[in-house]
Image (tube, rainbow, N blue to C red; front, side, top):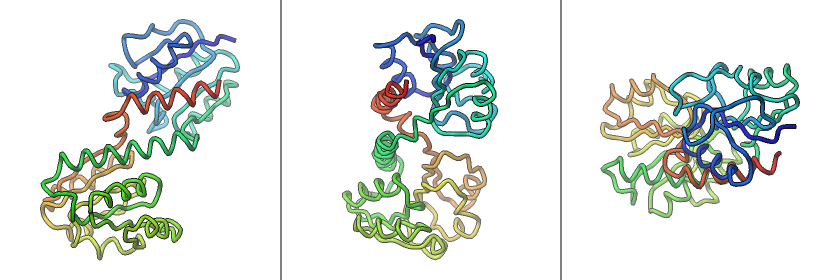
Length: 272
């Protein structure tokens, strides 16, 4: 089988992943960077970005001048090839199954997930410092969601002396927040907490803030969206009520792409 790698789409961290793998294997790329040779023929390993797709039609390719449909996978993958994807999607699974391709979700690797969460938390703190007129010391901050990113962000903010409350549905996640020496509340308490907060950080892939929540926020508060979502309704509500809104999904790819990309490369090489 052809043991060349084809990278399709991706952001700056995928460029670094491709560079790292190119030190050991032959790497071509499409919709990523002109430094790599354009694809020719079929490949034993096809690497998709993180996330691979957001709509089930197009590959996530912010650096590409043209849209890249998911169907390109079948065009370039050799028989029995491995498709390495950052995350899973039903349409991607269908394409791989119908074409006899092995699908591997490299973002299911726990070490990589933790590394990505740590880089996201670090980048979020950096962005907050640059974006708000508040000092993080003493700032009242609500973090919605209780996953890895939420907990690591809470831990760093506590070190800055912030007054942090983690809102999570899961009692276990709330207990973890207590163990990080930050406050914890059920997700149903968000509305009541809104009026007392300076900064809001959403890490949950769900709509938790609507008209009532934004109406209660004080003018000048900051709302940071860390989940990979495009909540246009929340942006409009933030503008309506004088709340600063920051879209901050995919921070490792923007602020620490080299570290994130090299971590991705290690996992990919271990899979093929």
